[in-house]
Image (cartoon, rainbow, N blue to C red; front, top):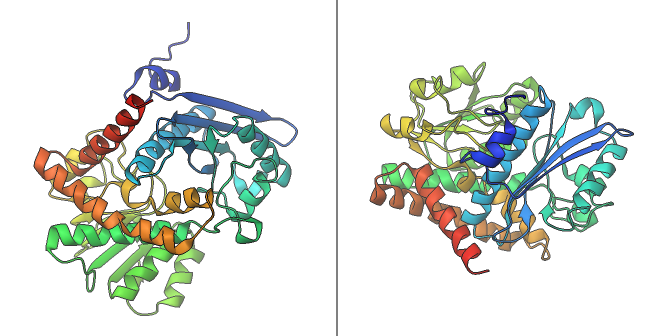
Length: 362
């Protein structure tokens, strides 16, 4: 018998990282679609989370990522005060090579087959135009263009929420929410990161950036010839002398056994999902005196936007809701101090309490 003690099935049924309600494996050979839809919880309402299109090394890695991301969405939606559970989908493959209209339509049919238990949106590798295509087969699609009844690019409010989390971190650590003259390192200046840089520069922060794509870096430097500099890679960024805040805004796992010991920043607050590579990293950060703003709390601006789209989108209403991330982040820091635990653990406790209360009320 095959040993799956360390595999995704063990994670799903036996691990603390599991407990998912449903996992759907999707395949459409005609279009080349291979996808995984993971629904972690519907305690608070239909699962809501984006679709990631990524060239995973293998199918097991894709399933594991879907499970982790879906679980994170349950906590994110709970902390954002939304009446939605957590779900996530991943499409396996390089979007630059295999993304087609036929593939996206096939994916939309699979999401539609769930009857509204899962509501999809954009994520890494998918864009507003893609959601417009998916929506042709599935009415449970958000993140569509305004021309097609949607709210457009959710990265705008994602960046705004991260910015509010940074302000709350500054208030907690330095007694002043202002980021003027603070040195902030942003790893990843794509869909969310470049909007975050705009907020930081508008307030007068000094920004250091890096990205695997040279064109993304050049776009920022051309727009901000003063006040923004670039370094070769993330390893150089996290070691930058005098860094006040580090913002991971690319893929997950940025905080791990290799990076945490060399971080120069006093605060970590970024847009990437699943920044903690494994349980225990949050304690390593606390032991080094580094304040960690939980990723799923501060990057919730995007999901606030797409959730609002289901009820008739209003940008000002969404921005007002996203601005509350400042107060939520401060409340988490206060809970962490009161309970003597890291902020990530405090956020988990608050989210789990809300989900448990919803299940008990059924």
